[in-house]
View (cartoon, rainbow, N blue to C red):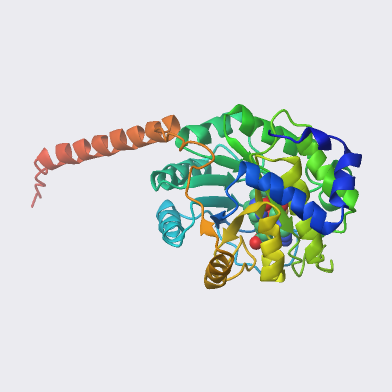
Length: 365
Ligand code: SAM
Ligand code: DTB
Ligand code: SF4
């Protein structure tokens, strides 16, 4: 059951969200147990492969170039560094790596060629590879799929109605289009939103309604609560009550019984009891590691202690889908062959030059 037919309308979702909390959690926990192992939680690591300098104006985001925020910007990481970080993440129990780039959209350039190599390398480590690179075309999505990408993350962030209050440089429909392109390429979709940006409860369920209206809802739904970062337009937003996160997780779980609900940004503001209720209500994934993309996340040891106390175990990779085959990338292969041919030509020219007797210079006295 990909969607729960009882909650196809905004009214039904709203009634569900506003139910007495413990009843809501009970209903969510009951559904969760039917479709998932309640003691398993996936640990996924985030890696910001390109940080800051983004041309977009997402009001929550510290990586938008137009806001004065205190982040360490850097250009695209090299592939070796990504492999090192992925190995570290895996050794610490993560079965998924999500690579994020502060791009408006993917461009067909050398940076994208490098991202394709990163996907191949991380797939080779037997990890689920997810990318979040902004808008992308169907061809670009196919290229990533061919390289072994498991999932593409692209959030709708909120309801269609509220979206324009937070972002003006790209439309809701652009986001839907990117999600569609990922889908057409055969990628699994990770898409969710942020609560605590000043939206109404109607907007929270409006986000879920957008997923209800899709032919296939996302396999993975991250629920973030706003990390209010100094320098962004949303810096003054008050943190939401922990109950709101629990309600949002539970409502998402009930509406999309098969999807993985990810308890994402905002955990540093939650205590263990509230997180436990989220796991009870159907969250089965967290971002692990002491950094999200640019903002803090709970310490690794703190999370391990939480797993121990709650009796949770890290979920292994590829429990919700086969490992994608990683094929050679035609564009990178062609580039490599051309570089090899150039090198060969150069060597031959050098050899030929070495064979020549240097011309004797005769000086006339
Ligand atoms: N640039 C790409 C894009 O926007 O699709 C990928 C990276 S972007 C940082 C990924 C997601 O992180 C955003 O869609 C948003 O949902 C989430 N995000 C960014 N800043 C956040 C914040 N301050 N608090 C909570 N979530 C945030
Ligand atoms: C998602 O929904 N949340 C993650 C992941 N997908 C890419 C990102 C959270 C970013 C929080 C702000 C930051 O650290 O920059
Ligand atoms: Fe850029 Fe993504 Fe941040 Fe928006 S959320 S400003 S697109 S990095």
